[in-house]
Length: 340
Image 1 (cartoon, rainbow, N blue to C red):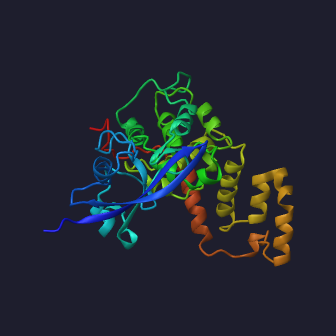
Image 2: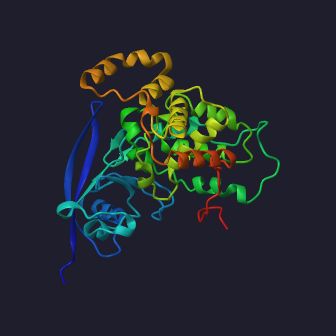
Image 3: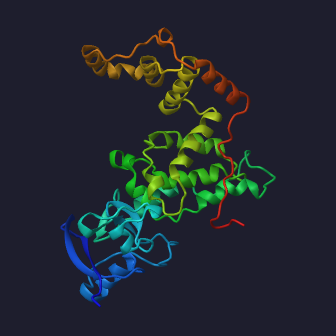
């Protein structure tokens, strides 16, 4: 019986005279129903080319070392089966590769050192910057229940594989953005009842390159192999910051303006929203405003002239939320480390 083979196109790279030089190299790899991408790469290294360089350790989706870009998405090589890539697997959110070709590349948004190995120091530095340990202070709670650790456990499932960081679209435009993994870990401490400096953390996280720089594209949720959902943690950090009165920034002002417009008119008052968000900095948008006027695309600044159907229902929803606000740290069921 003929053994099945798959064609791997691996991005190779090395630094020559301080410049990264990359090229792809093709390998034909045998596989069966159990073969993972990591096993395929190990076979290449052992049988075809011993210079192929990549990270790996546990082979059990725990250490996060083998994170890489597989068919255009950041995944764990040890968790991704060759057969799923070739045939597709809806349950695992894997589409079949084009032309039966499995593309392997190093993670994005991080400097490449060699082949599939990236420099993880910038990634870990951002985690260090959020002060990843419980701090003493006046806001710590003296009574800690098991239930209160639901969110802490959920976010603590992060294995620091860098997949969310690699696929983050905000990182592409702003390399100084703290990033989804670090912000998810920050939420782990803000939601920890033992943390004594919650407000100070939220003030720091609300500054430039923090929670409001997330574009909410959802790529980090799709990339995370452990279901941490970093974007959800970021949105919760925003809400908690505003609840603590941390509203003196563009992101918070934009969110509050959005909420007030919908609650009052049922539609957005975009010209005034821009003014409320940017304040005096709105003058920097004069050129854009003049261009919109020429094109006849300036939105109506008087939304009350437009009757919104169901506005009374919208207002009742807001009134109910004012009386019974949602707790963004509502504890979710967890099956990860520490649960049970």
